[in-house]
Image (tube, rainbow, N blue to C red; front, side, top):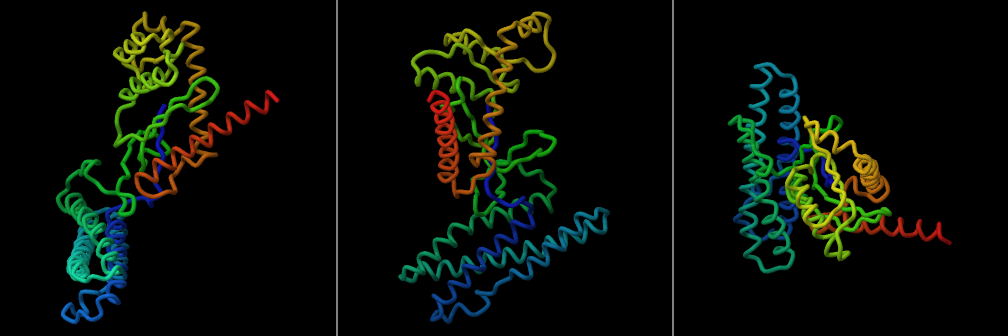
Length: 318
């Protein structure tokens, strides 16, 4: 089964991302000012911090856009235009300072230049997607968006859940065997279909244990006639993939069989396992940083779960 582990970011909006861009670049410019104090040709304006201005503009833009109405929308767009211009001005300042830092040989200068080189493309992407959405009226595709300057790998995942229709993080696929041990976890890129995870799960089980599982189950999102056939070809005796939507009479009878109904009840175990992983092992939200940190966080959460399950089994046998 799959779940979403969220990255540790605030709910993204165009205005908040523009503020983040100015905040990070401005903070680095302030540090660079001390390093480049002898570079008189740069002038004072290049180190100007526009954070207070952009915070005010972001509030104005947000309040106007929330009101609705033609006048409010016009005011909101005007505030957004000034907000974008202030961010672009900060980007130009940062580019100029970055070039000066790169010419200086000190370790601190190189460190600051690297920070600017990392965040400048992200800030430019934020400006680009804001212009496309707010001024051009474009629906920017999720893969082309950045939703965090600090965790740029974060994916936008829409799962049509009433309480949380959109989540920000990564989809994680989990394989659980009888007894509650999670034998495989995979951090997925983007928002791929659950159907694509069925075959890799079966192949990993075969590689790990040397034989197919007697029973394999997943939820409705994994069903396809091709996936059923794949499992049968690999030697799975009981393939439990409930078909969504309208069903033929033959299909209804197939899913009413005792082994199928029992398998569906057993499958609820992994849904419970996911709940435990989120509540007890930190898989609700990753507190580590970067893609490697995300994978590490998920891995340690699964390992902690497995150790707990093993400990419980050993305690009952003692």
